[in-house]
Image: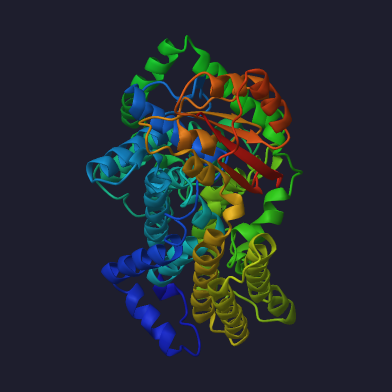
Length: 588
């Protein structure tokens, strides 16, 4: 489905012609994708506080590796973290180490350093979406696919959080990009790309994926390959002599020979050599507890039931897709009829084999989190691009209604960002307001371009709409929402210039971000134990929630101590929305 097979879109505007020139050059396409990634992912990257709870858990565990020098075990304070492999912690520790050598102040508590692997993973995934799409749908559609992947909400969020999902997407795209080349070469009866470079890329991606998030990448690849083998019959296969019910004849007629290009035996050995040293070390160190907790508890619990209250019915991912893949989700709905009509074509078949089985597996898992299906979002972007350049997006009345969700969601998001600042801070976020209005106007322009058949211009307008809103939310609204920045304000209130190290205890507020910012030795006792802690030494601070203060103060009085609060920090806990009022008490 190369560009030569895609009819040129009618009524090409100047913007569309510029797009075509950029798409025709690999260098220009990469430059535009990198620039777009920066404009989309930069806002909020350094200004967002540690976002409880997952991000500071990962960051704190990485920080403890640097503090202890132990790069095998994964710990959050004294608790072993045995749910995920070590890969992301190594990457975060390396990023912080580089930051320290470059002179970043307080590097170990600077959260954006821990986000660097996620940022690089997201940028790499954007570039690999383009590279994966090149042999499938041609240059123009490949560039558009990369731009849509860059602009979707979910990847933008994951790139700003120091955890596994954006980096995992990069490793999966390494594998899928190789699979796409071998599969398409086979279906077009071409010799597979020679050499060992592509198989090496595939198996490096496999090893990295296993070290970052265990079996998820392997699961996606296995489902994709199995589906393609089931669906694709060898062109030269004779009719089965034993009838259609003969399993051996059926298997012999399937097109699985293209998988030989991956050199499975050598690749599996290479992967084992890369991943086994750490797995052996952690199994020895934990007496087998890692396997029991990561597989026996974490993974199987997600399959058997809703873990940590993150449950949902089948169809949940389809419902949240309209927000997580905004502003391009309406385009996916418009492209769906064309995809169904062309489902037997090799390109569409490959993309659906990548998308559908993995999506269905997670749709029927009881545990639901939006980022679980992120690895298939690039496939959706490529399908949309293929339909668009084949003239497959309808312009009927129903299509205009669906496309109207683009400016509608822009309006809702702009209103929520401005309204949140007013509700919590009683301030007008002027930057968010201005950029929100521009985003709404841009969304309306996209809607009109779709109605006129200028789909490329519409997609580029959608991307501009997303950029405006992301800057409005991350640069204009969230920095003003000091009500949610509880831990950074507590850490600042705890600082004592005369003390080289401050020991801290917290009662009623137990978020991981506080451990990350205040120190690994943060205590979380009861109110009376916190009073004992404060009274027994100097350079100590206690954070006491207002509901625990009467017991805390009564115990201090019984100890003959009178310590007034040096500060108060109030706000909203983003986990659950509970209002907090915390007194900061320093030792005399």
